[in-house]
Image (tube, rainbow, N blue to C red; front, top):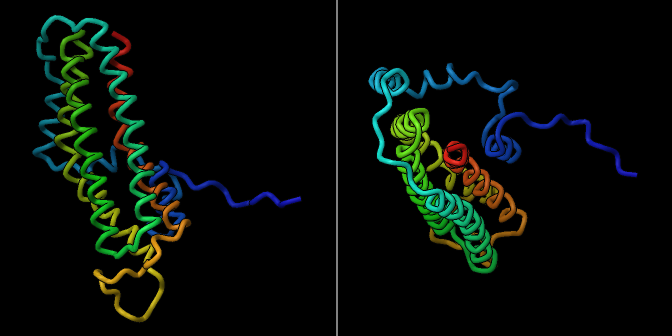
Amino acid sequence: MAKASSRPPLPGPPLTRILSRIGVAKAPAEPPILPAVLSTWVDWNRAVVLARALDGPAANGEPASPASDAAGLEDECVQAQTDLRASVDVLLAELLHAPATTALLLKRVAGFQRSLQIACGRLRGRLRDALACASEDQRRLAELDAVMEQVLSPREFRLLEQMPTWAAQHCVPASDVPIDPAHPIWPEGLPPHLCADLRELLLAELELRFHPIQGLRAALHSH
């Protein structure tokens, strides 16, 4: 009988756990304290904007959208998430079966990240528009989310755009010879276990980017 592992599960969200497992980043011993983390991400100018969104009155909205419109928007969010997950598998299937260079790997992963960022930003904006037509609390949430996206997105982008480099560093075989980015170091395609790690990373980023979308969907559903 196989012996169960005594190693405790790594704390933190999926992306942090995966990066820790492959040796890219160290998982924290304890979950970080949100106010302390935000204080390192938000400068005083953005903090003022955020405080105004929290303390100021909610803007007046237009009449609420029909329930059918809200339902259609929720369906669109679900379909978009399904399509993006499928795009991850398509991308990795191509890398699995074709010669790959580090430059190609970086380009393809970065391209998916851009598509993910654009799709999530569009859905987030549409959900805010729908909430802006509802109750005062929902309008305030829409305003707060818009400010949070504006305040946190630059730092989030700078961190997540490093993902292709992290993936490449993890995937490049150990060697004392400098890697030529144009040389296919994986002439037969990426090894399956490396594709599996990339898949976990990209799906974890997808989940991370959909967190605010899920929150806005829940608020819209409560209308």
